Amino acid sequence: MPTNQPTNQPTNQPTNQPTNQPTEYVFQTDWFSHNIPSLDIIFNQLKPTRILEIGSFEGRSTLHFMEKMSEYAETIEIYCIDSWEGGLEHKENWNMDTVEQVFEHNMHLAIQQFPRTTLFKCKGYSHPKMMELLVEGKKGYFDFVYVDGSHEAPDVLLDALLAHQLVRVGGVIAFDDYLWSPKSWNEADHYLLVKPAVDSYVNTYQRKVSVIQSLPTYQLYVVKIAE
Image 1 (cartoon, rainbow, N blue to C red):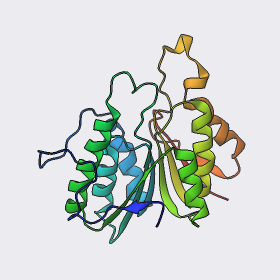
Image 2 (cartoon, rainbow, N blue to C red):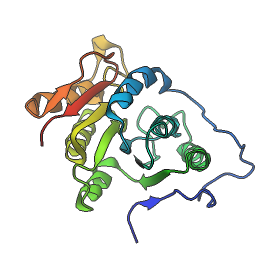
Image 3 (cartoon, rainbow, N blue to C red):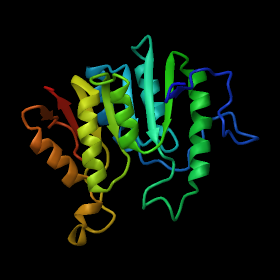
Image 4 (cartoon, helix red, strand yellow):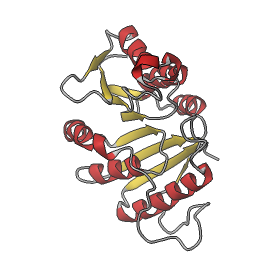
């Protein structure tokens, strides 16, 4: 049985879909929409059809990627990796079982709206799941990788290194929350920041990547120019 199961059949109910679900998308928060203008610029030029998403939460970003790709793509593949356990910033204020149910509900509706999409829900921690994809032969497979998982620097750094292997030459890796901090900047703990890890990846791979300079830097967008 394949490790990652596609959920592209709209007649199949999601496993954990709550009863009495509304027939519209459900979102409890929005940490994504402010990034849409920059991401749409990238999508209009790159026109990705195979996306890997690290950290899907309720599926707001996933839904936008489907909607955007449907403008030009005949077939779409999206792989969503998430443990649905939440990071340190989620565990006190979020019921992650509910978040996962909301994701499944939203994706069930999204597949009906965008039936050309094959969606793979890969539940688990990002590093082993990304390694599984490499073992399955998906080195250089993805046009676009969206990294929005753990915000702890060691985790982000390994996400970046694995993303570099999974994205194709000419593809883009987007790092969300590049400038995010759980604390004020005068007391920032680098272990809990995305930026130091991404900077380490970019500086180490300077001959193999190019940072897109013309877009706002709350997210950082990196083009892979060489293996």
